[in-house]
Image 1 (cartoon, helix red, strand yellow):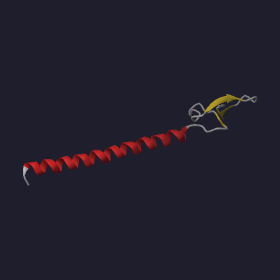
Image 2 (image 1 turned 135 degrees about the horizontal axis):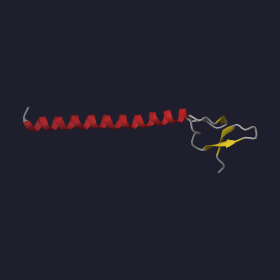
Image 3 (image 1 turned 180 degrees about the vertical axis):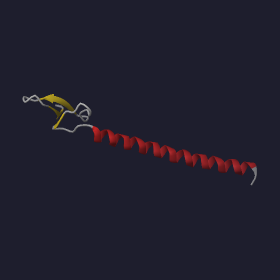
Image 4 (image 1 turned 120 degrees about the horizontal axis):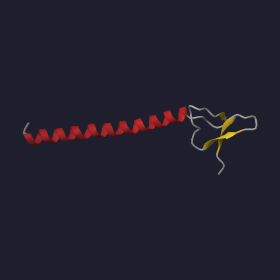
Length: 74
């Protein structure tokens, strides 16, 4: 193989590897989003100091003194 052919092959391999890595980084973002959703406190659950309420909910105190994550009013 001559120099031009080697250069083209190297360019194609680099493009393929770059595409694979880009796909993996998107996958990592999805997995991290899933992980964040798992560790948040869902609606109608007691508020926890270690885990914030999930998006769309907020911590509200009840008459019994316990705070619960409740859905936000629109």
